[in-house]
Length: 49
Image (tube, rainbow, N blue to C red; front, top):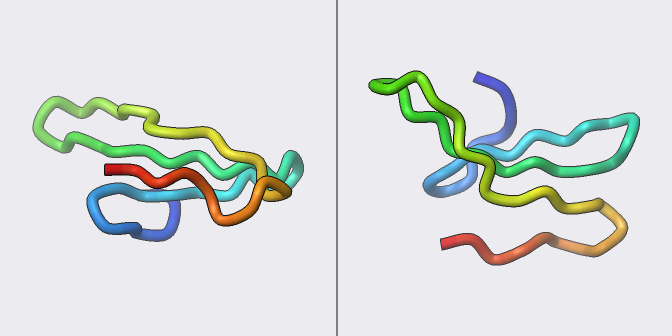
């Protein structure tokens, strides 16, 4: 599982582009739901959930 755990989801930093991708992985259905894509220059990131 990639990314740092954040309550209810995970976040991974794409180093070359400096974008954070927040996602939820559903193990039962083996699906990924992208919750947000956020550039590091914009600050702390969006409030999710």
